[in-house]
Structures are given as C-alpha cells and as structure tokens.
Amino acid sequence: MNLIDGKLTSKEVRKDLAIEVEKILSAGGRRPHLAAVLVGHDGGSESYVSGKMKACEEVGFKSSLIRYEDDVTEEELLAKVMELNEDDGLDGFIVQLPLPKHISEEKVTETINPRKDVDGFHPQNVGRMTIGMPAFISATPQGIMELLKRYNIETSGKHCVVVGRSNIVGRPMSILLSQKSNHGNATVTVCHSRTPNIQEVCRQADILIAAIGLPGFVKEDMVKEGAVVIDVGTTRIKSDKTKSGWKLKGDVDFDAVAPKCSYITPVPGGVGPMTITSLLINTLKSAKGEVY
Ligand code: GUN
Image 1 (cartoon, rainbow, N blue to C red):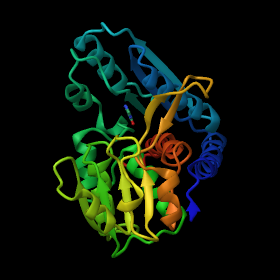
Image 2: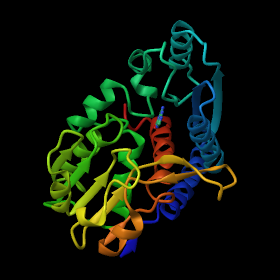
Image 3: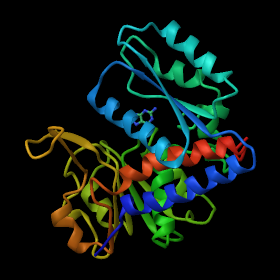
C-alpha cells in the first residue's frame, strides 16, 4: 500500500507557485490577489477561509477577507459581489458556502464574474470545463486530478467509480475522469443514494473516489484488491484529543481498507491540502490571464 501524501504534494506545488510569484514581481507585475467573502461564524467555514488566507501568504499572494454577519441581506451581498467583479486589483474571489438560508447561493454564484470565479462554481466555468474548454475547475476535483498525475496513476481505460454526485466534487470529478485528455479517458460510474448494490459497484472500481459525506462509509468488502482509493470526506467530529476540539473523518474506513489498496489518500493530509492549493493555482492562472 502506498500513501498519497497530499500535504507533501501541496508543499511542492506551493513552492512552485511562490517561484512564479517572484517571477511576476521581478518582471514588474502586480502581486496576485485573492479575496474571500465570509458570512457568519460557522466553525467549518471560519477554518477553511483562514486556511485559504494563510495559504495566500505562504506563496506571496495578497489576500483580503470581507466579513458579514449572518443577517446581511442578499441585496447587500450581491452589491459587494458586483463591486468585486469590477475591482481591477483583484484576480479572483470566492464567497464561502454555505450561506444563510435567506440568501440564494445560486444567485450569488451566478452573479460572480466568471473571469474572477476561481472556485469554478459559475455555470459558465462548469459548462466550459464540461466541453473541454479552458475554465476555472473547482478546487477539490482539480486537486484530485493533480494527485493522480503526480503519483503517475493511470486513468486511461480504467474503471473509476465516483460515490457522490455533488456539483462541487462528484459531478465534476466524473466529467474530468471521462474526458478525452491526459489523465482522463476512464470509464466512469457515478453512484449515489439511489444506487442499488452500491457495495458491488464499488468493488468493481480500479479507482474509487469516495465523496458522499458519510464518515467511514467505504468498508473493506467494498474495495477490490489493488484499487486506488481517494477519500474526499471531511466530516468534522468532536474530539477531546485535538486542540481545536474537532477532528476530520473521511468517507473511508481507512484502517480496514488501506491494506487492500495500491494507493490511498489519508484524512487528514490527503485531498484536503490539495483543495486549497488548487484555489491558489486558479488565482495564479487568473493573474496570468491563462483561462480567459
Ligand atoms: N464550502 C465548502 N467548500 C467550499 C469551496 O471550495 N468554496 C466555497 N466558496 N465554499 C465552500
């Protein structure tokens, strides 16, 4: 069994990004700039956004955090999005999800200028990605593709089973893996809550992507000997063993499954660190005008 070390890979990619930033600055260019809009005080969102801001600092990007209380109106938030859309000093921005119930996430996402949508959530970026045009690709699937590439894991002709059909992970993952491109060309099956015999389908996977949000869902008898297992689960569970009082639990029963795998990602330290790094990659691409 080989561990796919997302933390280490992420460090390597971030080193390369820092070098790119230095090149831009020494050529007289502007420092890449990412902004994040955070509404409310949800623990998970606070921690993700703080990780994103710290990562910017690490590679030499400028970062800005714009905060609102839970009672911000949809109108106020949309006005801020429109202001950021027009800000020439900004390469990209994200609005951290989830948003309070009185605000339409769909409306907010659609209002973001696709050229600054480094989360890759705007329908224009999703559409462009789907037909293989240059696009901002959402961070988690892009991070997984980067891990598969860097660990030389062959996808062509392989059977990939994606468990979960979310707009952020499962769906884009299935599109990228089946695309006619390097590190695509896979035969993809998407499973979800209505899939009968999900255990049996998972057992057929050469590459299994678990993105269903149910801690420990993938058990040992659902994995073929020698399979590659990518665990996207990040459920926060209370713990008295960590400083924060929380720990992350993946969708895979790691201890039981790992011995059967050729490669597996741990949680934490697998897909997670690459997700933030992908956001940095998209911000740099935007700064360099590589997508639009
Ligand atoms: N909430 C959970 N993941 C994400 C993400 O990647 N981007 C945004 N904007 N919100 C999230």
